[in-house]
Image (tube, rainbow, N blue to C red; front, side):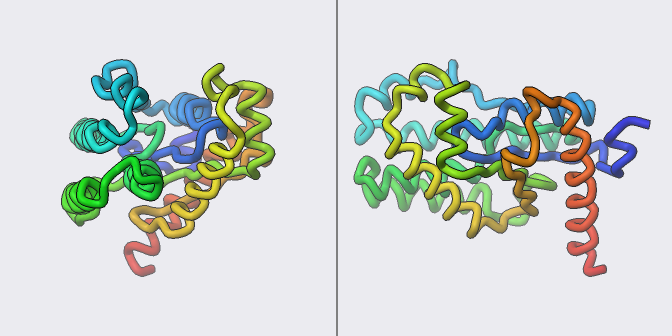
Length: 224
């Protein structure tokens, strides 16, 4: 009996991994997919036609970039469910509007009109009963100090050179976002409770918690 069957995780489940830079979303995605024999879905960055333009001029291209991300993530979400599920997804569609688009608006790099247009479109596309929401969102969290330490140790060169204040702000925005998130069930995992790089076997404990959480959420939906 494999881990998925052992902990009664449906073969068609869709699990999304969320969290700020440095918490290990990609590592978790790969480890869970291998443990459950699920497929993976990663963000497509290389083919994004707005990314370079955006870094040259935030104000001019932030709206275009966010619309592109919304469209691509929406298509990917549909593809996953049309395929029949059985996926671990690295980063959620919800983070774009709740964190990144809002940050551009707050900082003045997206106009109020563009932000309203974007959020109206997001709500019409995603925040409806017709949109296939994941069975579970795993939110990986940790203290600012722990996350900055991981970025310094394992992060990309560009991330390591980024000012500390940016990571502090991003950490706060993620915490505010997840504390108000209710589009699907959320399982919160602390990065200090496991280490998938040095101790890969800790994925067994995480899979057990995932199974318990999905089962509890299923009973709650049925009103049991």
